[in-house]
Image 1 (cartoon, one colour):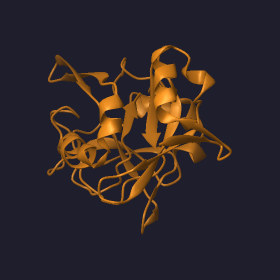
Image 2 (tube, helix red, strand yellow):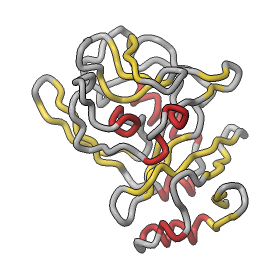
Image 3 (cartoon, one colour):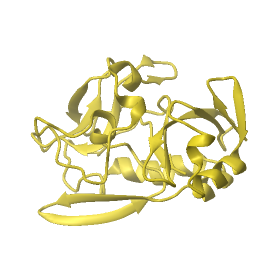
Length: 213
């Protein structure tokens, strides 16, 4: 498996992973570089390097949404946050097993923190829905709660960079894991034009999860 840099260069995956673990990752993979991943269902997807979190962790997010649309919750509520959401179950139980074993084994769990009913919950997932802060940076208007586990990724600093497609549907809105702070029925989403919005949790929208290497 190779990683493609601007289509012109390839780097062996195992060599790249060893370089990341040694703190030399930027010499081999940089923001906007792409990793084509063969899935267990016979299809393939592309993940994009969003940047580095620390010296030994490269963060990737799917370039486009997976084909299957899904809800964030079966009812219009964000109670329980992402931690207890149907969207998280979908990512971990339905999507993660589609990734090849060699990539699942290489993923580094991402630590996440949520305040749910005034109680702090810390947990870690190897595959996750990006946060609103990952896409838009800190919320200046209070549209979502402070997310100290997140920082805006280089690839998402323009609206165009945040736009994603769903096969068969074209450009499509997709979920983020952040509850909408102003509405107990909604989670934050990315609109088709790359801007931020909130949407009812029981709507079927796109999923474009991420992972760390």
